[in-house]
Length: 578
Picture 1 (cartoon, one colour):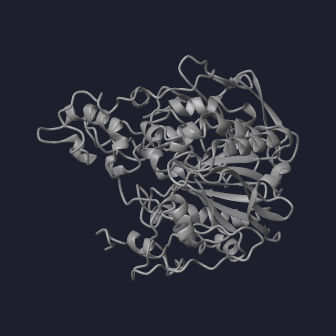
Picture 2 (tube, helix red, strand yellow):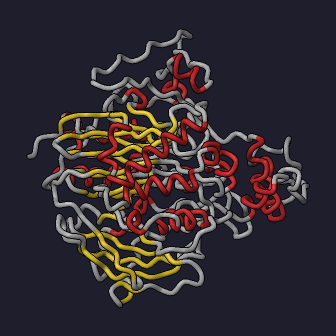
Picture 3 (spheres, one colour):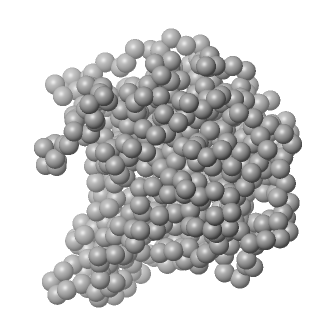
């Protein structure tokens, strides 16, 4: 058993040997291995952790690179949901909704650990939702004051399919006509199932000519230009995690401290448009690595995507779910029937996942596995619990230019994901032109809905032993990006020149903000970081000036002309072509 009383199963088959330093460690033991450097702790107002013997453990050796050393990242995570007053309005509203369906003696407040703060017999949340903005956002998320635009989604075809295949999708909302693709219906067209059912998805696999001029599609009367780099070409892309804006789910409203302060509802779309969608930009893809806008109902996602330019939405989007994409309060312990359990996420972002592995152009089947009804096994009037979407909906792999990507969710066991990731490693290693493999996930620690040892750093350690992926790992060409802890830092949890955390996008935590760019051109793999906020204590005028300089430069000439405004997190030679 582990430290929490759970069975620690042998996760690996015979030929896959995990690094001894991480296998079977409880969360407490793993934390004892990690130390917050005093200067960084002081900067973010945290007490330093100590080693298991009570002494401050030494910081890891400074890596030898021609760039500024960034110390390792402190662990802001908590082992499970803990009631805090900032959640009072949201929890009060859920308690009122849940209590009538409970049996005599059951208390909804006990599920949230909130009975001392919120009376179980309460009939009004006015005292907890006194702030008008909080009350409004808690009851009905407030959309941005902008017109609806073509809600386009572009995802790369699963790696087992021909390289030129791309999934082209449109999400429509109430009152919008069913779109046509080239004057004909999309292959799949249906309302969302289970959650966010006010929306409908229209999706087809299409062929895009690699390396040529954009392939133009008529989508609902709008010309959409899709580009795909040739096989093996150097590419660049923007990767972020945990973005939040002011008006979202109640979680984002009360914890989106820096999203409000830095005006991310306006500025994040502006930066994405400048870096990704601008005609001056050579970006081929962009990604959001979980906790996507902290959206329980689907309304804020619509508002955010309406604020993006069509050029941005026409680029390949890579995404994986985080804990808040399953349960809005972040952990299954307090999941309720009003949570989405990944259903809204998977249909909204329409990745060509393992669930769609058998579909080809012209096939009309659903590109999802709908076998996990979130409400199955629970009486319709029961308020708590629910099933997550099937694993296949959250796992995918593909190739963009000279980069192979593997996207996964830590909400499922290693044993269950093993067949999928084995196939992905073998397939990508055999693809011509792949010179870098990148693992994309959400959790940096295995808490809050993450299965044991399925956090990204530990999963990376396991995946790096698998046939195909091991070759890239030995050459230093297996990397990972992740979110969860709300900071932007390279080399997290001791994975120097290997891992990157990109979750400083508005939520409480470090308070930093900026855009990371992964760049594999010029026979190099580089990670450029464009900082907007280096420290939350900086004067607003300094932050505003830095933002304007980065934005205007990227708008005028593309991000590549602005690297003098960036920090170089990584600079290595690419793996030589096979």
